[in-house]
Length: 160
Image (cartoon, rainbow, N blue to C red; front, side, top):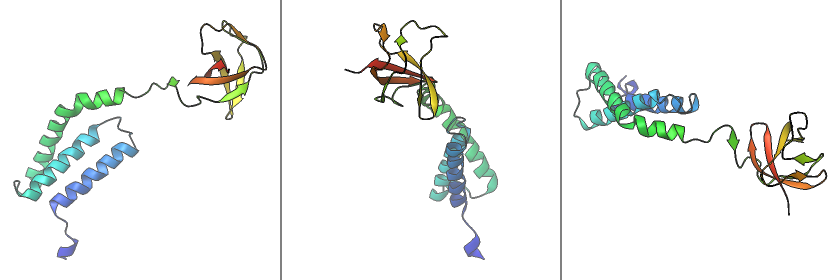
């Protein structure tokens, strides 16, 4: 029967790892709440393993709470900065960079809403725009290269 009993540090480590996996897989590090609780579990497990803390439910719960709050206070700003440093969903600079194709219609710099040139690529109709603001017109049949992609748009230049 004693083989089935797992120690408190082991349980806390299992709970901490589970919370980190849940935070990563389900929430994609968007909440950080579970990550801070997991850090509290890891520190408490370490303290229990060393023997500093009494292996009882109340001191363990208080310790997890205190270390979770401490982790939140210390890591909140750096983790928020990490979250906000991600690439904007509007701009995907290397998603289709380097793709070459021939234009099916003339592409002008000041094309209006009705003069939008589209290109079907990878199963999607993309609106084409000139990448170089100094370029005025690229005629139909000219080979172009994608320099940048945004949501629904490909920015192209004439190939040399």
